[in-house]
Length: 266
Image (cartoon, rainbow, N blue to C red):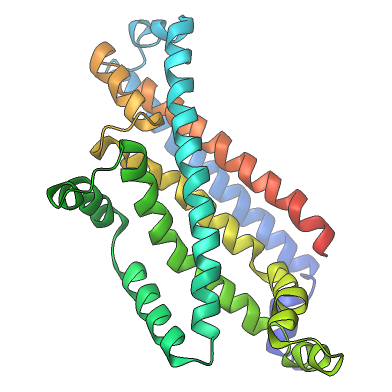
């Protein structure tokens, strides 16, 4: 009996498929473990794992310095996320508007921001704006470009979620006497959030990663402070390992928070 594509994609795996999946997972884990061991041995042979490169991590001042950088990262990422979520909503409303005077400028802004690298926007704030008399702090030189760049992507994520909601939901809301705006904000968009939470979380993770561009404007975020430690103690690999672990913890916390946020929606 032939199976449909939907059955193949979403049906529970057969015992044979589960066995193959376990075998492939075990092989992949073994390969990754061997790769990690090989990298660790290479670092050891290069002397990067020597005690002298780790001793300063026992000092409270080192962790206080990294903590300040982490707070700088979180402060920039949080504000950039607020800008992206709010501006993304405005761009979404403009793009879905029936008025061309709103729709076409919104589309133009979305496409421009999506097509422009975040790094280029940072250089505009860092080099171009001061030349015309607009001076921003290092915080805003980093945060504003990240927020603007992410807002365009968030607007498209919003739109994908809205389009995934059946049109009948809007028709039913309108039949109950709600205006088009009320139907959108009270009926359609809350349902759209169910579909887009994973994509929004992915964008928030990217926002956190984009704050590593802070070294360009010498903003005191985590990566910038890590570079200072490397310059002072010549401890390249240990510092990058610790900084990477801190970024992983932040992104893991974001993922866990999103899971708690998404539970009431199911």
